[in-house]
Length: 341
View 1 (cartoon, rainbow, N blue to C red):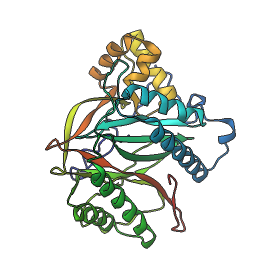
View 2 (view 1 turned 90 degrees about the horizontal axis):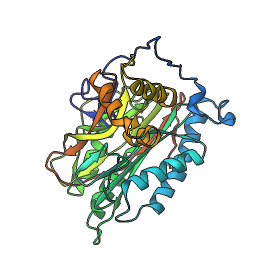
View 3 (view 1 turned 180 degrees about the horizontal axis):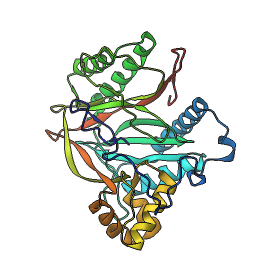
């Protein structure tokens, strides 16, 4: 799920943010390095290379995406969807890279249900899934129309075709502006607007947003993509094409680990660092493991600027938004490998 990079990208937000504060380890907290056993990497996966890990994560995500499409039905509780998708990721031998985003209608991204959340799957539902193997991430999203009359069909096609056209362009070593222009023209040609302050992004080990942003509109950048892993994710809307911050998404990230005062906050911080490192986590996960103390502990961690709470991203004119996303690798030889399709 991406934290939005609100700064440094000319107002363009990635689907999840860069850390607000440079991560500093505290000797009073049991913070391990990225090779920690708590990442629960399968023994058979530990010997995989970087590119093999990216590919394995993509293979698992393809299966999970199929599982999710078959699972989701109108008026199904979002919390049940989230739990079952996460369980399937683990069952298939990988780990969630972020809490699955289940965003309805004008919420473009960053919604995850709490344990007591009674929200049902309705309207235009975006399902954004991240999976990692050895910390190397596959990130993919799709949209489902759950309305009785399938009224969002064309809006969904607009984001999907924009993604496909952008991916077809990659073999030509396009500039970032050319990718954005392709996305923008595809969506606009269908009578919709791209969400211009959301973007695709680079991926790195345990980093969902690793610096480079891939625009959803022309931005006059002549920069081309260096070898590495990336996600392209067009958003299309019937509205103005910008998002603003809304209420809490129930998704958090450690940004500045230091020793909190209460034992419960310390226990939660140690648990999250061991399991997720700097990857995002959800209130729901903590509620399932720690119960009612979770909210008080999270409040303390927020107040002490130890964690960041991601807001929901809401289309400014409150119009529905569709999303499509795939991850690809650009090899040192310039070969393009799409890992999630």
